[in-house]
Amino acid sequence: MGVKIEMFRMMLYLSFPVTMFWISNQAEYFEEYIVKRKREIFPPDEESRRKELENFKERMRVRREQQLLKKMSEN
Image 1 (cartoon, rainbow, N blue to C red):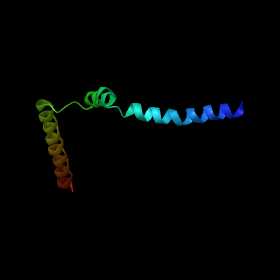
Image 2 (image 1 turned 135 degrees about the vertical axis):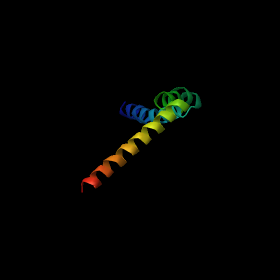
Image 3 (image 1 turned 180 degrees about the vertical axis):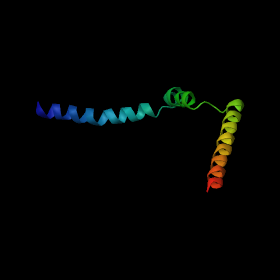
């Protein structure tokens, strides 16, 4: 009886990770869950968003330069 239980436990311990590895490496699973989720989190670049971000960066750069010039002129 004890050997049968140990064999069952060993089979379960070995089959679970192998099964999970096999399931997670299926191409359909990868496409369906991983790629769709990535596209939700990081949508493809849109021209308007990219321009808006570039404008924001430029405004921040100009603002930082003005602050530096102001500090330098005070000294």
